[in-house]
Amino acid sequence: MNAALLLLTACLAAQSEPKPPDPDAVLDVSKVDRAPASRDDALEAMRPELEALTGQPAQAGTDLELPAGDSVLLPVEVPLSRPSSGPLVLRIVGSRGGRFEFGPLLSTVELGTTSEASGAAAPTSKRKRHRRSTKATETIVARGRYLVRSTDMKPGLVRESANADVVELNSGVLVGRTRIELSARILEPSTELSAIEKLEVAARHFSAQRLEAETSLRKTTGSSAPLSPEALKPGRVGAEALQLIARALEHAFRAEVALTRLRFAAATKNDAAVEAAMLALGRLLPTAEVGRAQSQGKPRDELNAAAEHLRVLALDRAEVIVAGLRRRGELSRAELSELLALDGAIAAVRGQSGAAEKSMGRALCLDPKRSSPDPRPPIRTRFEAVKSAARCVSALHLDAPEAYITTVNGQSELHVRVGAGPDPYGVVAGGSIMLYGGGGGIIAERNVRAEGETDRVLLAVFPDDESYRNIEGVLLVQASAKDVSGVILASVGDPVPMRLEVGEHEDYSTGVPWWVWVGGGLLVLAGAGVATAMLVPREDVRGIGPIDVSF
Image (cartoon, rainbow, N blue to C red; front, side, top):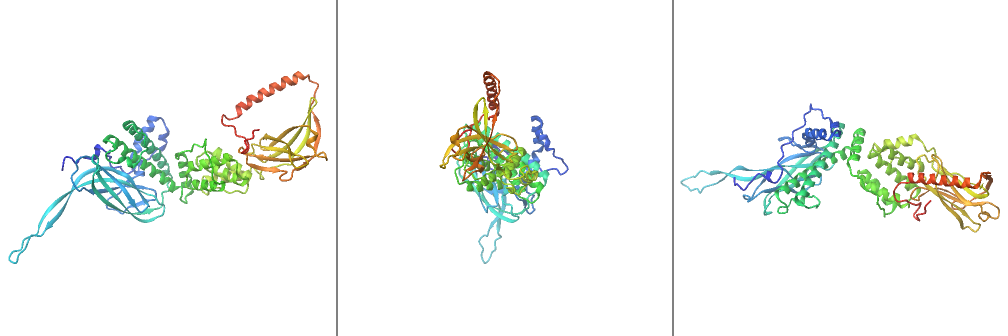
C-alpha cells in the first residue's frame, strides 16, 4: 500500500471495540457518588457498559433491531478514487429520512484494500477461440464505524440513507464517497429501571468527558469558538486539534443518546419508568438563569408556551417564561393559579419537593378545582398529594373589613382591618385599603404588607379624621389582596365601595411617663429594623403592582 495512506490514528483517536456488558456483572451505580478517586475508578470500570448503552456494536449477519432512542455502531467501507498524499478525514456528511441521526464522524478509521475479479474477452476468430482472461483488481478503501441513533418513538421498520466522505486533511480534496443504506426495526423504548439509572450516569459521564476535551481543545488552539462538526473541515486545524474535536463530538453524541433514551422512557405508559426518567432528566438538564428573565408576549400565549416546554421537558425554557410572567404582575387570578401550578410542576421534575408543594399549594388556594398541569408522575402524584391534604378548605377570599379607633396617649388613630384566607402557603404578600369620599373619589389609600400565618391580615392605619366619614358617619371602603408581583387575588368593595361603621374607641393610654414610651418605642423600632434586615432577601425589592408602590 502507498506509504502515504497512513492509519488515521494520527488524527482521530482509534478506539477499541466496546465490549457488550457482562450479564452476570452487577453495576454498583452508588460508587459514582463517592470520593473522587473511587468515582474515577468506578467510571473507568463502567466504561464498556456506558459505551454499550450509548452505541452497542451491531452484530454481523443479523437484522438490526433498535429500541427507540437507542444507538448502535455500524460498519462502513468507503472506496477511494486514488492514493492519498496525506492523512484522511472520514465522516458522515448528510442523511435523509428524519428518523435516524448519524454521528458527525466515524468513531474509528483504518485503511485497506479489497480485491475483486475483473475480466475482458480476447478477440476471437472462426478458426481459434481464445480463453477469457481474468485478473484481480485491488481497490483502496477506508473502513470504520459510525454512530447512529433513532430519533422517533414510533415503532416499525425504518429505512434511511446517508453519505460518507473521505477527504484529505491537508488539501481538502475529496478522495472517496459512498452511500449508506440503513434498514432497522424500531422497538418500544426500554423501561427497565436499572437501565434508566445507568443512563443518567452515562449522560453525566460523557458530558463531563466532552467538556474535558473542549477545554483541552481551547488550550491547544487558543480559540473559544463553539464546537461543531464544521470544525472538522480539512485545513482548519492540525492533527492534535482534530483528535480533540473528534473526541469531544463523539462524547457529545453519546451524552445526547443517553438523554434521548431517558426522554423516550419518560413518554412511555410505565409509571415507574416515567417517574424515574423524568427525575433523572430533572437532575441532568440545565437550569435557566432567571434573574433577569423577561416576558413580553401575551400572558395566554406565554402560558401555553411554558406548558409545551414542560411537556417536552425543555425545563430551562419553561423556567424562563414562568419567571418572566411572575415578574410582570399582569395576570388574572386564574392565570396566576395556572402559572403557579406550572412552577410547581417544574420543581417536581427537578426533585425540589418543598418548592413544588408550595407553588402547587398556592395554585390550589386560588383555584381548589384545578387539576394537575401534567398527567405524568412525579408531577401528577405530587399535585394530587398536595390537593388531598386540603390545607385550603375553600378558595382564598377577603373577610368583611372592620374599622375601629385606637387611642395612645391621647392620639387617636383609625384602623381598618381586613382578613385574607385561607392562605397556608403565603401567596398573599400584601394589599391596598382605600377610603372613598361621598363624591366617589379616593380620599386616602394605604399599601400594606400582609401579617399572620394561615389567616393573613391587612391592617391600614389612618389619622382619626372626621373628613374620612360621609355625612352619615360611615366609611366607604375598598380593599384588595395582592401577590408579590401585584396580581389582585381577592377584593371587597369593588366596584362599589363597602359602607363600614366605625367601632368603639379602644384606649391604650397609660400613666407611664412619656420618656418611657419614647425609649421603649426606640427599642421596638431598633428590634424591628434588625428583624427586617434579617428577613428581607438581599435582592431587588419589588413593589406591589406595575406602579411599584412599596409597603
